[in-house]
Amino acid sequence: MTDELERAVYVQRIDPDRTAEYIEAHDDVPDGVTEAMERASVETFQLFVRDDIVVCFLECPDVDAYDEVMANDPAVEAWERRVARFKRDGVDADAAAGEQIPYMEEIWSFES
Image (tube, rainbow, N blue to C red):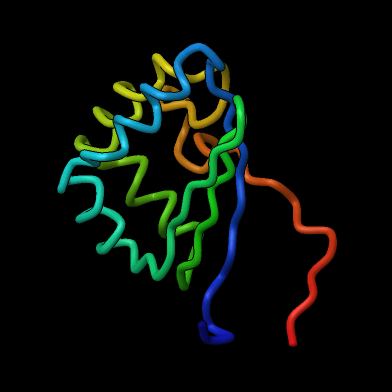
């Protein structure tokens, strides 16, 4: 990672009865979604799941530019609508660009 990358984290809640389905859906993320991530210059995107909580970790040069690409891509919108059925809250495909992803505020960090 370089100093030029921005990091963002957000949490989504999934239906605990559908966790396995949510995880299984990610075995086949559409190429259009990963192509949008490449256009947004994503260096790292990771999902972590525990019980009904999904933590998403993103590194890219410009999170605002990432938001713009993702909010305006039909493949991403279709994907978010597909996985929305497993969620209680999280990414909102119907929200305005820049408001779709519930980013967390960083309050502390340690790096060596």
